[in-house]
Length: 342
Ligand code: XIL
Image 1: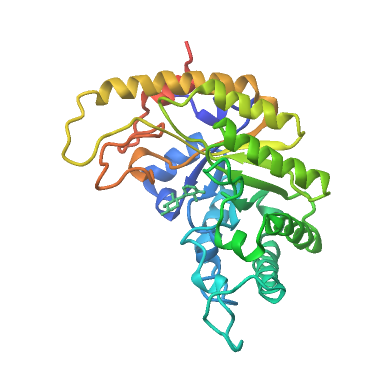
Image 2 (image 1 turned 120 degrees about the vertical axis):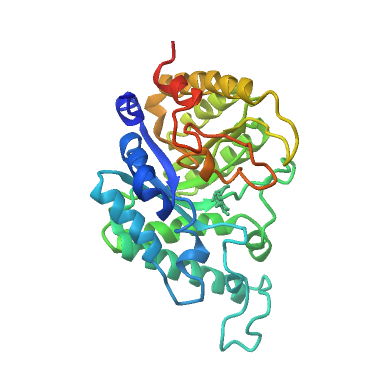
């Protein structure tokens, strides 16, 4: 029998996986239970999943995951209240039913901003009431920093309506109030983003968190998505952890995967096996670094239970294999790199 990841890492941090209902059954469920002690809902707690229509909340798919976690002694990391993608329903950026401009896009007047804030309050309030402290942390905002480092903040619909990052501050204030109101005062509030290993983007995120702390905004933690590849500098991943440690915030690796750079459909990939071995070395070095800084990390979550469930796997990229278990649930070199770093 091979070692469990959660036991190997027991003294360091929790090890999580992003999942949905498919991962709870049969051999997938066994693999999940054997190795992981935390879960994140890959999609089921996103805005469009929780509130597809304004005022109509659907918790069933998310509940299934939370109940499974509780029954199996796992923690749950919440993802996410506020985002900029298609997984935020279109109604959120439109005038509400009953308004003279119902269905038209919001502008950036004070009234329009208030509509956005009221919606945040209703959305987060419903989740706080429904889950209380059964979910120990939430990504309050996701991906609010721009990839264009000169721009600092992502110019999303949120940013346009508020003409600045004030909505980020407000989201944290609203979340803290919502959880306080239901007595869930210990729930941790995270800001989550990818590319935090990129020094420019990292510094922009750092600046935002620093500003929020100075303004008394209740931000507790920074989530490093960590969608990286074999060429990503582990030193830069480390530098980012060390940098945020200066702010005294909690940190978590929230969406780890290490792409091997598989080519498009139908193309040859003679390096496939060699890349998987290289990936094993990469996971070995990455986790050695993470464990060295275990005091800085609450949890490390991989974005998928196995390669066949990775969001990077597609018909156009059928051989991308960024995770620690293979499509057939076998332990990859990446797994051995974590458990047997010799
Ligand atoms: C991805 C999911 O894995 C996909 O199933 C979905 O179609 C799109 O979203 N950053 C995030 C995650 O914060 O929510 C994304 O998850 C991956 C990138």
